[in-house]
Image 1 (cartoon, rainbow, N blue to C red):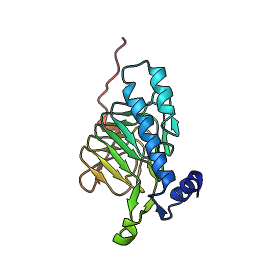
Image 2: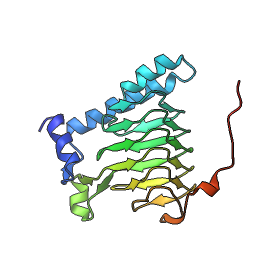
Image 3: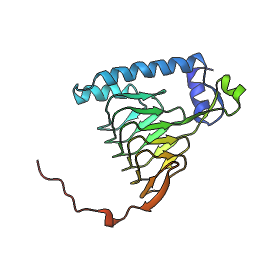
Image 4: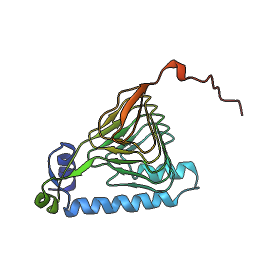
Length: 199
């Protein structure tokens, strides 16, 4: 199978061979592309945006990663507008990662869409399977959070620092812990009355 056929197989959720030459080459290309993007830190925004567009499948306006950003393939990552990731973000995107508008990541956030086979003999032969991760608009993911395959995080939610998200989180929810669990709903009472001052 060529790379495009393997990509479709991975996105279908079926078991695939993670050790093929085509996937190894795609991962190497992603390393080289993220190296170029990371090395452009401090350069003009348009230059960095053009380099990011060579890494990911889609980068909305204002998408930005602090260094160091790493991904597995890149082409399965779709970022909304005004996405921001703090230092040391890792997105293993075999199953697809879709992130909405105005999403904030703290440092060292990791999203892992791929899992290795449970059977040790299959695992040694490269058997893997992937599930997508979707993050809605206006989500804040705290520092050191891990998000595992197949998870959806609803719009406006907050994931507390250090959480491990193994199940989907509803919209307008604060979730914390290992594994992450909802602790309360975000309401109008959380508003502080803040208004940005004119510059």
